Amino acid sequence: MVMIDLFSVPVYKDSVKGTSEELFNTFTLLDSIWKDCEREVWAGETGKSTGQKDLFLHERSEMSWIINSIYPHVLKYWDQNLKYNPTKIIPVSSWANLHEDGDNTNEHSHSDGMNQAHVASVFYLEKEQGGDIEFCNPLDYIHRLTPRAIGLGDKILSETVACSTGDFLLFPGWLRHRTTPANGRRIAISINFNGMF
Image 1 (tube, rainbow, N blue to C red):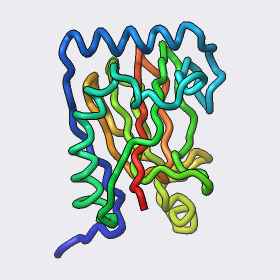
Image 2: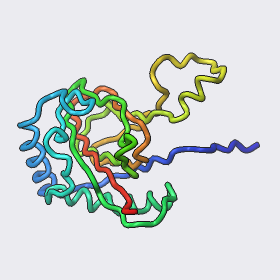
Image 3: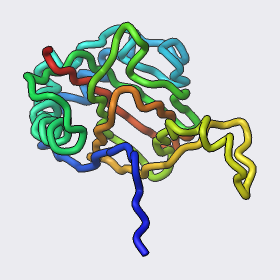
Image 4: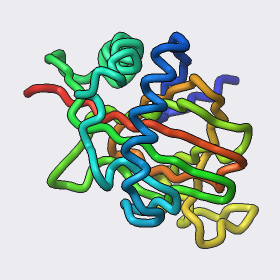
């Protein structure tokens, strides 16, 4: 017997490391932006987000080591996993979220109909164990039409992906996601990549 798992959504996970100087410069940049940010202001964040002040962190030299490290993986993911049309791929937006104990990100996607990210990414500059990302099942509605053995409740079905400091994830920008409450300090840098069609 063979079980064929059709229509899966590929989520790519790997890790990168910066030098002590690169890490210092990135933390210094983010701290300088967060000092002027308020909690619970930016798009479903209960912590602080540079999105309140700057959505183009990828243009900052202090972030280049992250972009340069992740970019080859984006190209591979675009071509081999998503099988998207070949084109030039560039970062189009980026921001960083600072969470302390109990902070979270509400459910959202990086595509809203008018603006869409072809590939979304999150890089964990700092992360304690727990407080992970949950990817929402795009077939949630369909599952609710079936005779499931266990009740589904009101929360959209999801799968949790555990990550640690230095890990990054790539996923389609339309895939809805959220986080569980942070367990300690969590710094997540989001970078959206688009093809130039």
